[in-house]
Amino acid sequence: MSVEKRDPHTGYLTTGHDWNGIEELNTPVPKVIYICLGLAFAFALIYWLLMPAFPLGLTYTKGLLGVSQHSLIDADLQQAQTDQQTVTSKIATLSVDEVRADAGLMHYVRATAVPIFGDNCAACHGIDAKGGPGYPNLTDNSWLWGGDADAVLETLRVGVNDEQHDDTRVSQMLAFGRDGMLDRNALLSVVTYVQSLSKPDAGTVEAIGAGREVFAANCASCHGEKGAGSIELGAPDLTDSVWLYGGDTQSVFNTVYNGRTGVMPSWEARLSDVDRKILATYVLSLGEAGQ
Ligand code: HEC
Ligand code: HEC
Image (tube, rainbow, N blue to C red; front, side, top):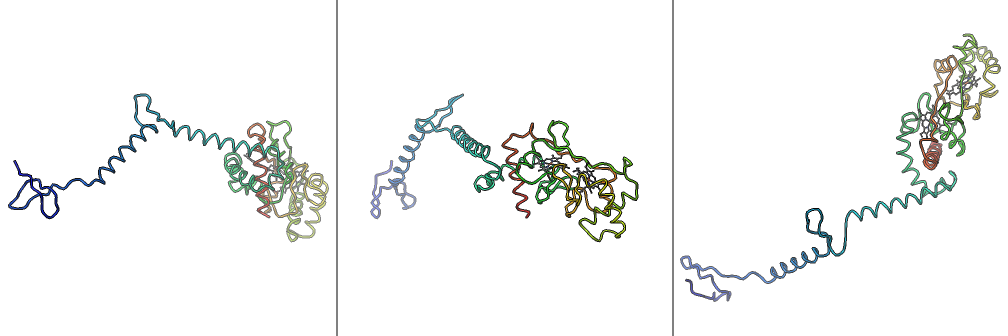
């Protein structure tokens, strides 16, 4: 048994152990530790009462506040959905031009259109909408079927040469060579003439002159007397330097020899009215950026 003894310097009791004259102080745990422990315990108890805490087999204690991350996420999703519905119903009632004039709506249009375009249109028109041989560039201001909102909306609705849609736009560049409508000389001269419309030094004066006659007799009915094209028939403007199928001699020859029938699917059955409007708005805004 040790004898109770107080250390004269600190005033604390010693434990009574003595190792060759070295004694051990019995320092009490500081009060602040007890206070902190008490607070932590109280906090845990209150938190447990208020918040979801203990698992109880198939369920758990829900807490007095009834907080649940599930219901928070549900509420967030619901809010996002309502916001989206407000925006889409606004887009549905406004005209494409009105939507384009509204910076806030255009922000939404771009964010929504990019994935829809990527999923449905990029395979043919390219992810940057710049097209490729046979697939029109949608970012320039050269349009086969017209570049106003109604024309683009209609193209999206009915498609081009799409047999699935009764109202589809129909366009056909005839196979003048393959079907024997023009002989080789006439073909070669009309090709030279067509090239000369955008590149005056494309051939000799004689060849261009001969081609002009072939063109007036065979091509002007669709492409116009001056070759400026027709948006009623989807016949391209041959006087600009924009080519759907290529402007080099071989490509133009192929076009006139074999004909062309571009097919653009109709989207009426696959995309909602609002989605088509969003896409048309997006596509037209690309044209503007390319100016
Ligand atoms: C299967 C390939 C294909 C897909 C997919 C496709 N297009 Fe087209 N698109 C074409 C072709 C080909 C043309 C040109 C038709 C022609 O020769 O007149 C065209 C024409 C157009 C035009 C008219 C261009 C003009 O100059 O008048 C627009 C606008 C257009 N597409 C938008 C879209 C959008 C938006 C989508 C996605 C919803 C889409 N396309 C999906 C092939 C496609
Ligand atoms: C029945 C109307 C029609 C007639 C006639 C016609 N074309 Fe076309 N042509 C078209 C259409 C429509 C296209 C677009 C085809 C497509 O988009 O797939 C086209 C496309 C072309 C193109 C491709 C342009 C490009 O940007 O790549 C050339 C070149 C062309 N025609 C030249 C001619 C010449 C030359 C003749 C006369 C020998 C002629 N066409 C007669 C309707 C016609």
